Length: 132
Image (cartoon, rainbow, N blue to C red; front, side, top):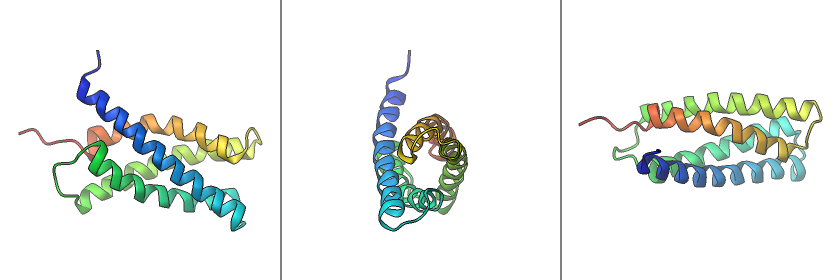
């Protein structure tokens, strides 16, 4: 049986992830369709925008950090997100390069896979509450 506080975190993480995904997809669409960037460069820009949105929401809403955000915590968050992005971007790029799917469906598939890794790393490392 899953412990209720963990399940609540997962639900909040999915909500924030959805908002992050919408930010990512929106900026990807804007960069590639309206500005004319290729889907790879557009994805780098969209990722940075989503990173800032999810940092703010995960630290205050998902994990409800009781400590004031620190440079160390932000650095840990960025490290997890960069490694998660590496996984996400590799899957996304392979799907686009293989012409398996269009960029937005590729983004959905890659994001879902990377989400599991990201939640685990944030829960046990970035936002781990100290034992008192």
